[in-house]
Image 1: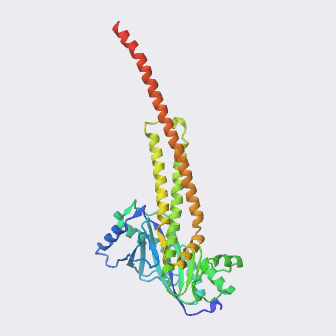
Image 2: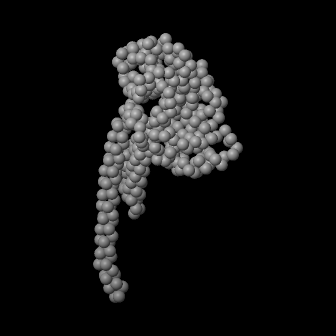
Image 3: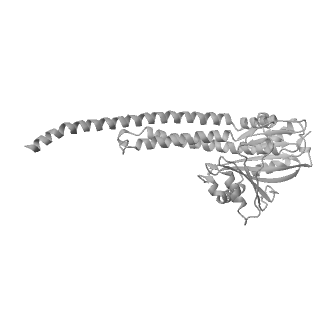
Length: 366
């Protein structure tokens, strides 16, 4: 069946914006702050997680009333959902209902790509929530980088694998109005998974298209994967900064190394703290989500992981952690060598003093 002939398609477009808002979030304290905020009766919190998604701990869902935003001739719903993860990520989600031919989503997908108004509005929502639950966030602060993702959920069954249908899907996934090559279409629609004969999920790096009913769990997996991608980028950037600082401390010229005792320990302690922080954060993000009792959702997550290149990100992060560990070892050796030099000079000075004192005493006696 040709995608352009499919009429009466109903569904919802989910706009996801992931922000890094701090080192970690005490979700219990954040929930108490929200519950105690009586003036904002429009705010509700839902700590419940989908049945098969075992988060440790479960993220905190916050629902806020919001005026509709006009995007591509459509409007967002009058509510925005914010999802707080304990590892310091915040996901802001908008919904746009749609109905009609699937091909009409071309214009919407183009409008949604890096939409400045939605980016500004989502950041404002993030800033408001961070200001509300600020004391519950360790090292609170919203990073400049944002990871956005779009999910189109169509309530109808998947309509076919013909060339025209796949081209339409690829154009929506890649936010392209013009024609695409067969190679590009195949690449955009290559990460596909189905549970039953009528449902399908196409996952791309910029967007995903879901066909079928009751796809909330798949949505939760994709939202988490988007937040995980953000934190992978942030951690990679943090490690780059740590390596630059470590290289600078390690490669200081001898005349710059003349400092008060303990200066070398300050460098090694700072590098060690960066190393520990990065390693702990890496493990916390990777161990947050456990998919229990549902192999389909596990496959969805693996598919999203491949599309987002998590394996490459993890390999790069682990390599930089190992490099940082190597530099820390060299800096520790340097610090130990400096301490030994100082001790040697102190011993030499004490010996010299012990030799000179008898002569000075003898001279004063005469």
